[in-house]
Amino acid sequence: EGFEVTYLPVGSDGLIDLDRLVKEIRPDTGLVSVMAVNNEIGVVQPVEEIGKICKEFNVPFHTDAAQALGKIKVDVEKWNVSLMSLSGHKIYGPKGVGALYLRRRPRIRVEPQMNGGGQERGIRSGTVPTPLVVGMGAACELAMKEMEYDENRIKGLQERLLNGIREKIDGVVVNGSMDRRYVGNLNLSFAYVEGESLLMGLKEVAVSSGSACTSASLEPSYVLRALGVDEDMAHTSIRFGIGRFTTEEEIDRAVELTVKQVEKLREMSPLYEMVKEGIDIKQIQWAQH
Image 1 (cartoon, rainbow, N blue to C red):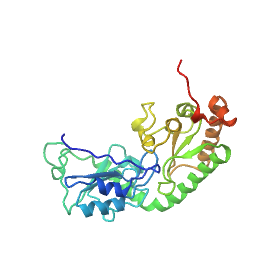
Image 2 (image 1 turned 120 degrees about the vertical axis):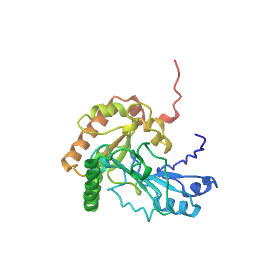
Image 3 (image 1 turned 30 degrees about the vertical axis):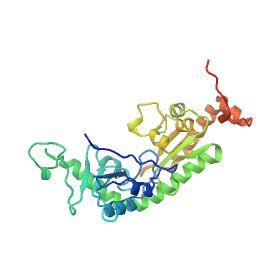
Image 4 (image 1 turned 135 degrees about the vertical axis):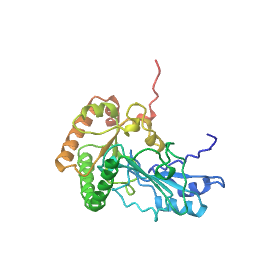
C-alpha cells in the first residue's frame, strides 16, 4: 500500500538489537511493532527499552502481547505502548475474542476494522459479543491473581522436563535465550532426528513443530531460521508448552516418550552412527546421483 517496512533481524538468542532499532528509525517512520513474547520459542523482547526508544523518537509503538498477557507483567505505561493486541484464548478465556489497547494520550487513531453504524467510537461497527468479553475479563482477573503462583509452578515443571530429557540423551539444544524467556514455552532441537518423525511418535503428547500458523508446511520454522539455526537442527525442533493445568505426571510421561522416540530414531540414523565414530558430518561432500 505504498509503505516501506524495515524488518529487524534477531540475534541467535532471538532478541532484537536495540542499537540497530535506533539506527533504522527514520524521520518518516510511522510505527514500530515488536512481539512481546514469541509464540514459537518463548523469548521475551526488551519491551520497556523499545518503548523508551519510541518515546524518544516520538514514534507510536505497537506490541503483540497475546502470549505475554497473564504470563509476565504487562504495563502499558512502563512499556510506553501506544497499541497492544491481546487474545482471550491464550489466558484460558473464551476463543473468538480479543482486545486492542489504544493509548488515549497522546491519542492513537486507527482505521475502523468494520464500517457500519460507527459503534465502539468509530473503531469497530457491529455488536460486541458480551459473554465473550465478560469471559475474557474474568480470565484476566484470574490470571492476575494466579500469575506469580503459576510462574513458579511452571518454572519447576520446565526444569523437570529439560533436565529429565538432558539426563538421558545428548545433542539437545534449547532454541532462544535461556535468560529472557517465558518459562511455559520450551523449544528444543534434537540433533540427528527428523522433527516430523519425532512428532509422529509423540502422539500422546500435544507438542508441535512450530506455531499453529506454520503447522501446515514442512518448511523449517522461519523463526528458527531467523536465529541462524542450521537447517538440519531447525527440522528437528519441537515446541513443548507447559500451562496452568500441566501435572508432574504429564511432564514425566513426556520425558519418557521423547527420550524413547529420540533414541529409536537415532538408532535408525546413519548420521548418528557416523558422529559416534567421530566423523565430522559437516565436512562430508554429498554426491548427487
